Image 1 (cartoon, rainbow, N blue to C red):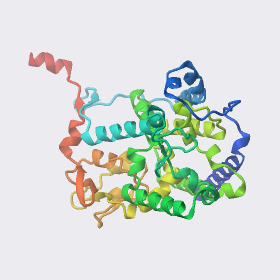
Image 2: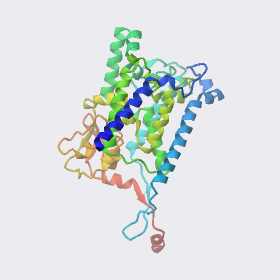
Image 3: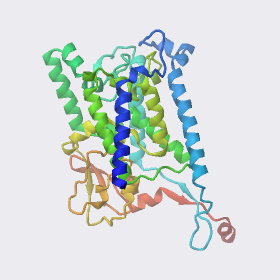
Image 4: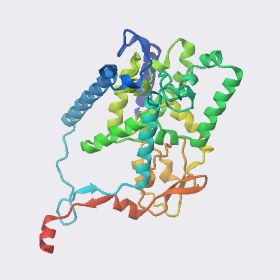
Length: 394
C-alpha cells in the first residue's frame, strides 16, 4: 500500500511539473516592459543596475520568507529536542569547526571564480571575448556573458539545426561531448553557478544551526523519477510548443543575477523552490537537474574517479550520510575499487567524512589527489575546553 501511494504521489508531482513547464510563459514572475540584454561596465556600477536586480532580490526575499515559514511549521509540529549532547562523565560537549581540508578550499575557490567569470566576465572584458561557445552551465539567454552553454541548444535542437552550418553542428556536439567526457560531473561540483548558490544555502543552514531534512532511499527514488521527467521536458518541450528556459531556474542565476533586463516567468518561482529545497537538502537541484544527469552519463569514461579500498572500509555509512546525492553504493560495494556513480558530483564530501585511512579517494587518470584520513577528519573538529579543567590545570 505504501509503495502504491508513493507511486501515485510521485506520478502526480511529475504530472504537475509537466503541465507547469508547458504553460511556463503563462506564469510571469517578473516582466520588463522593454527587454535589454546588454550592460556596459559603466552601467554595472549604477543605480540602474540595482533596479535590474529586482527579480533576483524578490526571489531571495520570497525564499527567506518561505524558509522561515517552513521552520516555524516544523517547530510547531515537531517539538525541538531540548536535551544537550552529553559526554560519558555527564558534562555537555560542544564541538567547533577546526581546520578545513585544502581540497575543500580549492573547490570553493574554483566555484566562486568560475561563477563570477560566467556571470560577469563579458561585462568586465568589454565584450571582447563575448560569443565564445563552451559547453558549460552559463545560460545563453544572457548574450553578454563570457561563455555560453550547450544547455540552450540541447533544449532547442531545431534552433541548432536552423542556425548552424553542418560544420558548426558537428563542432558543437564534438566540443560538448568532449568537454563532458573530460570533466564528467566535476562540472557540477566545481564550476556550476547553481552549485555555488546551493552550497551557500547549505552553509547558511549550518550557520543558523537549522536541522535539515533526513533523506531516505524512498525520497531519493522520487527525486530520480522527477529527474527523468526533467530530462524529457528538456528535450521534448520545444517540439510540443513549450519553452524549457521559462521553466528552468538557472535563468535567475544568470543572467538576472548579473543585472540583465530579461523577463522571467515560472523560472522565478522555480528558483524560490530550489533555494528553499537547497536550504533543507544539500544540492537539491543537482538531484533533479537534467543537464547534470546527461553529463553524468559520461562518468564511466571520465578520468575523474572515486576509488575505494574495500579492505580498509568498515561499512560505517559515514560517506553515505555525507553524500549530497545519496549514493549508497559508495559504502555497500565490497568488490570493485571504482565506485564512481552517474550521480556523483565529485564534491569530495564522502572522502572528507571517511574515518578510515585510504578507504576512499578521489583520483584523476589513476592518480589519487584527495584521500581519506582519520587524522584529517579528527583535525576538522576541536572540543571546546572545559573551564573547570582549565582552572585545575592552572
